[in-house]
Image (cartoon, rainbow, N blue to C red):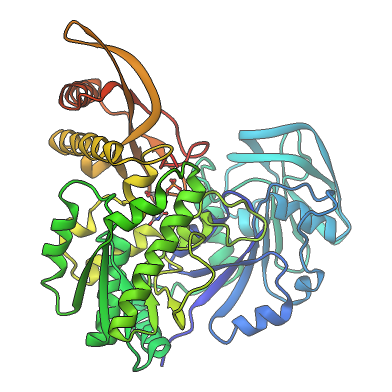
Length: 516
Ligand code: XMP
């Protein structure tokens, strides 16, 4: 029998850190699911069939509780008798809903604040009198109803934390989920274990069997194909699907022509050895034809997403496959705008880039709730080759989204060469293991240069190297100048069409990791 995991539901009010709350809970060995902000008590109860729901966290969000269309909590949620923790917008919403008073703060607080802990109880148990916390709010709670009590304040925020006097309901104006809140982990730990009384019974190890069973029950005895890019997500999904489906499965690698140098050969070498059907679809011309003149990044992603599906459909027709499996992971879905109150950041080719008319009976995504680092753990447990586990992520649309603007074959050649130089030099310098991703971007800007004694007018290549844990946030890496110098010298010497190399020094946010 499958164990039911103790679970905390995170109600999503659209805040940029919502996913981090989910991650932090799972890091404590407790399962978490992100759910719609207006979930009803009946829906919570229905989730109880699958999980042991032990508590709710209301995330932050960009709205003000006074805006006419601000996302609201279903008021009946307060009657479900589960512990509730409201964070930032969630804190204000709880106060408003229970007749407390919220108004625009006299002085808005963004960044690190000093908070005075007046009563170190419940979620705040064990904290110091003064704590460093991360705040990001325009409104503030300044009065509570009689059945609530204030637990902490800041200079500008009279009620920075509160609790209900009898029920396990808490609000924190700050974000315990971000690392800048010094004891944020202790606050969440208190909520999870002391307030919600969760048992840490969720392990990535357990989910392999669960995912294999899920694939089996979705696909049954039918045939399926899986899109395999050679990246870690689709490789892990393929390994799981192979366990579940054996030779009912065909793995399809689509060579769209925007892979890195040497990549199609390497993928063929690795995967044609596995005991599954492996098909390599040579689709370079058809992708290029569809992309001629397309310069808008979102359009590019959609054209690519659709063409992938068309190739899969053609192969499925030959093999008789009714199901398509994909290695979509959680952040792909978040950024593609599966959430009600957040923006589409970019349409990941395998999510929002998909066409609406698809010939498959169903798309099955076994990794849809996992973050990249969790996928890596699963890869290790499945004994996938080390080079594959540690491979830097590579977007499905490949170099097509690293060539800014419209594509031409000439630009693809330049991008491939520049990318190869960045990879070789970073790997030679020993920095590769510390980096999430490192690559070249071919910008659509040209610049003047001088090569030999002559004027040259050529492309500007940008180098991007980022450190990250799960790709939802990232820092540009402080690559030593000598390494950057070697990269720049080699690119401008070896690729005559390039006159200038620049280094991207932007974190995510505000930038994303990829340029398109
Ligand atoms: P961004 O650029 O949104 O990227 O910061 C986050 C991570 O996702 C990868 N990425 C993609 N992967 N299909 C994918 O399979 C896509 O369409 C796609 N777009 C971005 C990106 O390389 C980074 O690791």
